[in-house]
Length: 506
Image (cartoon, rainbow, N blue to C red; front, side):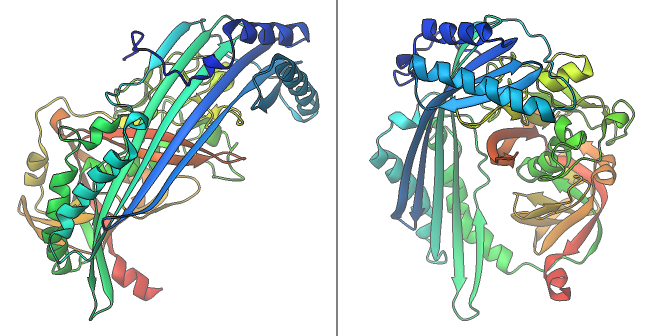
């Protein structure tokens, strides 16, 4: 875990708008009004989005939000109120409104609200980045994106390129009546370039997108020494040519060697969402669905083969869900979700943890000052193997199979059980060697069959931290960033469809 206490917080943090003493005054006021527990949280959120078409800037969008909220427990019921004012009188009214909300929700609550105990902390957390992208001139960022794009466009086979860059800077203050006072700054980004060939005669398009995952890093990620966008951009013309000339896959059962750039999404959908405790309890049923991995199965469900070891964490360096503390003041940690193939735990906030009689594992997050913290996904990752095993080693074990790189379209049912995934690139494996690209591949199955077919796992040299920049959940809807690390992995006898044939059948 990294907690950088020696770095200077940016001057724009909301501590410039509200004093520590004022925050303590508000918490004391909530207590005087009858709240058994209360917390203050502020958030300043800076967003920038840059989009290039070929070498021209299509748009630059900058946005900022800044405000705070009070959340409290009154008469064993939650109350919440948000405001963009930091004035003491307005914050006192916010406390009163939160109490009134708690009185109203008390009527609807079936069970009294209790939260798991957590020690108090006084800390300053800054995520691991070298160059804050919001301190880099816009022209410098645009020039870099143009340079990367132009490496593909130099080949006339590429008709056009798109580069989409999203940058986020998140600054928070958290304080509660048990004595915590925590400031945090997080930086994250997502950069994707797509190269497209247009066949005018056939009126057909073919494209390919960079495999660069979104990360909790700064502008250094886009410079030499960061992710190698340049090499990918240069490779696209030949890769797309090969893809266009590749044969269509023959449907059937194949052994699959899946690269982390694809497997992260399968982890996200079939394990990450399935082990959210509120979903397992049915709380998300009316919006996002439920989970087949219900609490009665915890400790006994054979989720996958013995090679399947999945952790939840909020401590991985550069992880999108990495924090010092969650939005309920719970210290970041790591824990087992699936151990030796068996489901052993879930993702919890403090209220869920209290219901289970355990400590929270720190999975509360709110995407703005105006939203209440809800249980959100941590970094959910598949552990690499301990024995030396490269991607080539895994491929060498396959007689008739497919090697899959990059994520693309996907589908999964509301219980996170039956699914279908495609990818960016597919290579036929024949007698332990790559045998050229193939096309129109989708793999299909259900969560338990798929993960129980896990027959080989790469070592740390194959491990990549992928992730989702904007995972949606809740009503009102919230988004959250989350990373999923994993090695290259081998799966036996997975059903593969031909997407062209399937679309024709429709």
